Figure 1 (tube, one colour):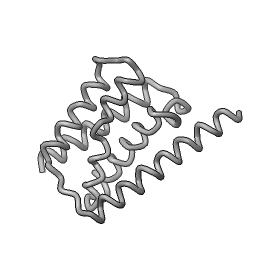
Figure 2 (spheres, helix red, strand yellow; figure 1 turned 180 degrees about the horizontal axis):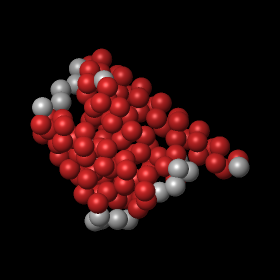
Figure 3 (cartoon, one colour; figure 1 turned 90 degrees about the horizontal axis):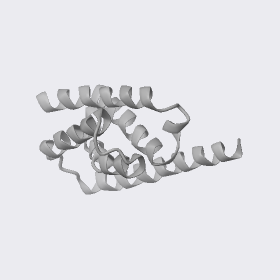
Length: 124
């Protein structure tokens, strides 16, 4: 599938750009940490676990969150994240009720992970 392959390449490039622009510490906490975590999970899904392709929908909205926290309206990262969202919307992924519950649990787990990491950073 061409769109899936394009998405895989864009997700990889986005992760590289984030790694080059931010420290590991920055990529572990807050909203930026959540965005980074979701892109890493998406990369894993696209490469190794296509059965969970519905989880890619968690990337939608990431560009708005990134713009809100970084105040960057332009640039490579914003552009690539926007392209990822466009491809995901074009894929028109249907999500079952069971998958919706799993997505909710995934979001809760992600938030706990990011909050726990933020707590560890404050204690240091």
